[in-house]
Length: 73
Image 1 (cartoon, rainbow, N blue to C red):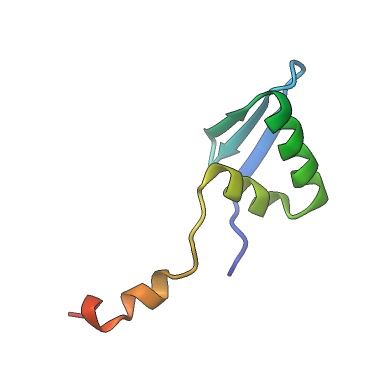
Image 2: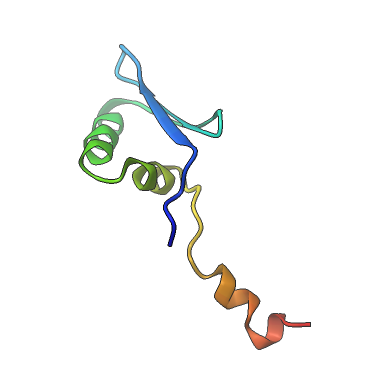
């Protein structure tokens, strides 16, 4: 599956993390969740981590579902 793109994140001085998707706010994380997110984003593929944390990603079964006999017309 290709890696999602278009994500970025900002760490604010107050500890808040804002995740952006194509220029729009996708998530705001505060406290221990923000720290956990930053640790995970810095240790792995940041684009994939941001997609998973925000829920903005495809599940990989779209082509399979489209080709299923009941969905063909």
